Amino acid sequence: MAWKEIGNRQDAIKFWQAGAVGLFDRKNSICPLCEKQSVRFYAHHFSSDSSAIWSWCQHCKLWTVASNMKLWGEFDDPFSNAEISQYECLQQPSWIDRLDELWEAGTLPQYGRRIHKPV
Image (cartoon, rainbow, N blue to C red):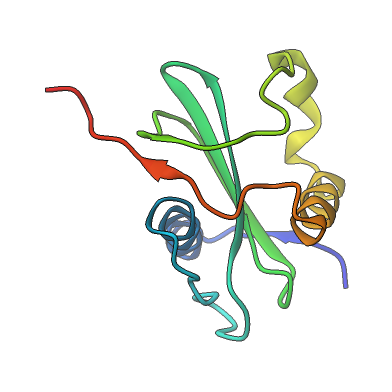
């Protein structure tokens, strides 16, 4: 079964939330659509003001990405030294295959650490 990007914004928001819970609250979030498996995630800081989080379900093969936001957290990132130009291919389904392989291998961090926004 091939990966399919979530087209419905309401469903995508549920995936983003599940990914953020896994990343920052260190809890497994069951896929809000198939309810069979935990949502997997990968987050990347492009700059101090721009981040993205990819969320996907290995069971139902759905994925989404939320970008152009600031994630208030710290996490290990195996692609932290990649240039922005290298991320042009990230919206492709093959990228999700790669992320899933890295997740299975334990290369992607399974959680992060929430930090507080400065007041």
